[in-house]
Image (cartoon, rainbow, N blue to C red; front, top):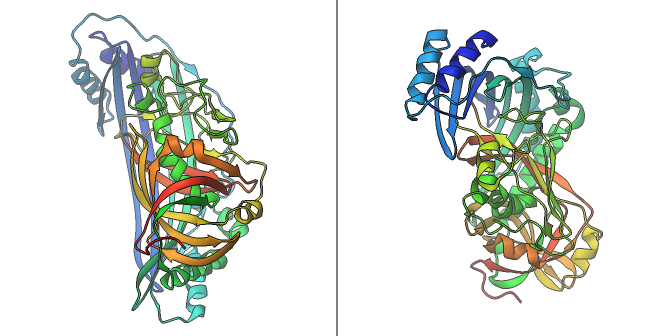
Length: 466
């Protein structure tokens, strides 16, 4: 840790040439990872990470650097080196700090540190054993991972704020590869949490998750090529929310909005989606994968209402990018670790429950696509143009879910798709993932209820939809 006395000297060194803000971010993290492939342990690693990131701001300029030299002289030297980016007189001096106190919504009752490598391997092998019971030669590869992290961070800044945060995260993942003369399909599932190790033994049915992962891969192996064209698309709950996350969530971050690189810039108070759409980014869900009690600038996590009844309400804002739009941060500033300069990022981002049911939405769709989950794609946040591949999809005919299809790709612009959502169900679920951006890879939840978009361009090699 960094003492208050040292922090004051380091911050003042950083402020010596006219910076209007300085920040010290100390981190000490431990990671553990085990992996089982085809029933055998092939990875078992532990590592630690400890260092300091120092950020200086002046108006709309930012300089950032990090160091593993945690001595007083090393930190001051580092601060003075960054301060050399500015050429002016001191305008601010730090004399003391106030501790930022927030409610701990993510207490760990069953620390991962209290469980052995062998316990975690045994848990993964339960899932592998369940997959082996299927006894299908088309299953050619199985992999299972368990990853946990214990992260301690401490912040001091020139606003006179300081805080400490101690948190733990855990996630397991099953990947099943299926192959036959029709090709290769890969199926992945990976629940994650901040609750503690007991989540994986008491709440999650490891065998069920593993079996469902394998069964989905086998099913999609039999699928025919998806037809192409413009059609209604029903998007499944949970992981279906990755489309909103990528095509709409990133353009709602202040890092894009503040520079005018977002179709949502300057549109607070305007209709940007159909009236059945409301969406939030909520850092305060207890124990959730993407939750944070306090962000990486010292601002408490919040439930940010982004869209309400189709009207744009707010953005996800960090203090620095907020300068350009005359806003203070609203608890959305995050980074992967001390090596990254922080910026506005999502946490638990989802479309809210609507008034329909999944069954009603399917029944009211005569012919279209049911996209359950996605395998990845690309998005341009400045235009919200997206291209997403579906990992699990089906044709809807006469209000019924029919044959599975593969190779489906959804193409469009996020802000236009929001306007075409005409039905939203009441079956909200969240899915755990990692999101990569300028400040590294961070934990995020995506989510939504089942919903229908009246028309999306669907790419596929199966000809015209009939």
